[in-house]
Length: 180
Ligand code: SF4
Ligand code: FES
Image (cartoon, rainbow, N blue to C red; front, side, top):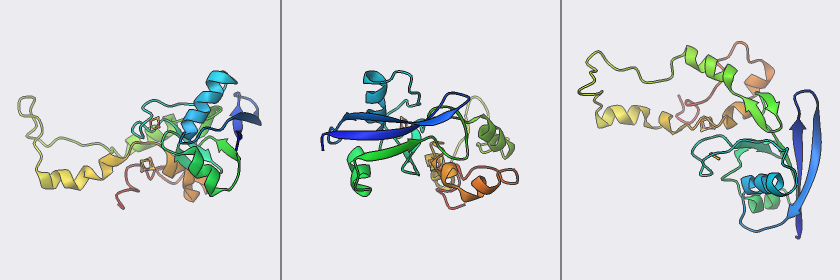
């Protein structure tokens, strides 16, 4: 295979369209590498977010052939092999408002999350001198939840959100991985 094609869902704030980009195939690269290649070498107007490039920050989540995934940890080879193709469809996450191209708006979801206070609240004995002490058992209770990097992939795949997000918190975030 000499070339790979991405069909990318673009959005300029008013209209949406699919744009095709062809770039040279390189083995062992990620979806994020390909998006960066397109932006750097073909079309600087292509807009997406990414930061850590190590599956830590959650900023690079997109849909590849309809499935939400982290672009920085998803191998291009794996996707091409899975669908036996040289062409992939790249779209923004579902169930979020799109701001531009592959960038989605988190504000509404963060506001809803804040309603259930999904953060640690110190006990009364908390003081600036001693901090908030925690036993290993206490830590185990919240350890799994703290694995969530708020990438939004689960919210994108959630059918409940697609059908109606007004009577639902709007997030599996932090909870889906812990099974709570
Ligand atoms: S729980 Fe959802 S938002 Fe958190 S890391 Fe998993 S897929 Fe991403
Ligand atoms: S760039 Fe941070 S998770 Fe992908």
